[in-house]
Length: 273
Image (cartoon, rainbow, N blue to C red; front, side):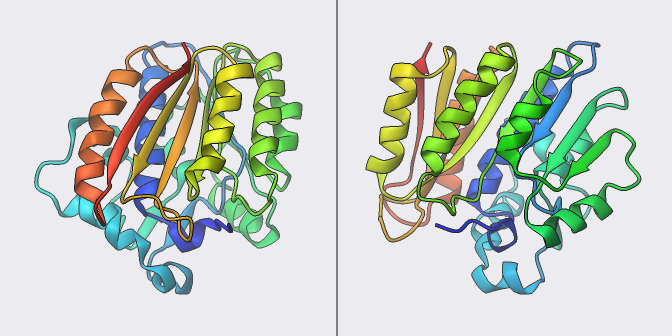
């Protein structure tokens, strides 16, 4: 599949991914010591939902628009909603901007993007933020060159576009190498669910040979259909101790709120406790 951020900004996958990221960041802020955040596939940092790409798919209408239309959003969405800004249905913030809005003056952020146009936009969007360094480079290479961080505390978001047939293999290898370099970091890896046997094989490999303390979270908006993305997941390595219970309750709420057809559900499973 091809998952350019602009076409899917604000959809159900973004709601899940960004709300979990916000919860992790808030947990990291409980300690005064600064921390580092690396976003390996950052995109531009913000998407114009009136633009051609977002309007072509209209996926945000069944994602963020549904959440904000409700009167009582789930309490665990509070950090993410606080980071959305004043007009998220016009300009939806991606993971870089959400992280930058939530993190402190003493924290440090690195955003990587390989697509030249997106990398240029990313650099421009954060030109005035002294905490942020943007890099026009491959995100997998960044894992090798930027870890471990000098702070020895950090969050790593790995959110590839899944344009390559061997993406799951690259994800596994990159994670294994990164954890060997920086064992105490919190890693958040996003993946799509189309054919459950494909993503399932990836999860089975992680359960057998992946790092310890690996938590799997999945959100499905309908029953599986190999012709389209009907769900997505996050593997969180070294998650905050409160995340598992909070995330399951949140994902159950999102499955009900964002369901598009029968078969919507949430899943939480420790791959390697």
